[in-house]
Length: 207
Image 1 (spheres, rainbow, N blue to C red):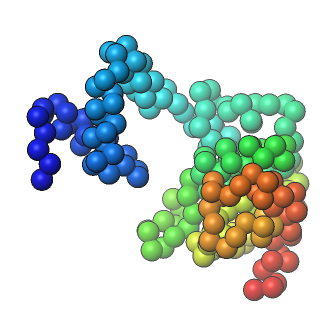
Image 2: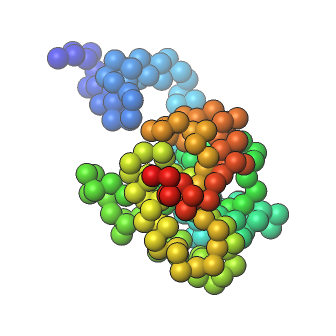
């Protein structure tokens, strides 16, 4: 058991160690680093984190994070709003935006269907997607979900839910390796996967 010379240091390490990918040794290094910085720098960091947690909201249209009720992408009249890219989470929006190959808008599901983790369709923003499609102005939806069993399950569920609408349903090309997360895919490969997307029903028929 690690012995700390200060209870305050131990408390800071305990909190930092709760962050993903941060073990106690790394948390200790981070805490000691912050201890060496001047008070203003540490207060600025603390204020930024607290303000982020308290003030960031979710876009009422696509569920991306935003500083306003409508995110900058959905609020941009130059984007093609008839073209929706469905992604698992916010990190995927950032990854695709970095490719510079997509000029439509997004819909963030907030996860993927995973019975093993107790996540069903009702836990995702699927009904909100259906509501966006219902008026008939959307002409294409790209399913840009992870190439995993859970991603494929979610794709198929969305395919069934969207079948009644007159739109094109595509999926990203398999330049993204099976089992890969979009955020870990290089920008060139991800960009090409968006440009070379294929009709979803074609991929379904090959299984």
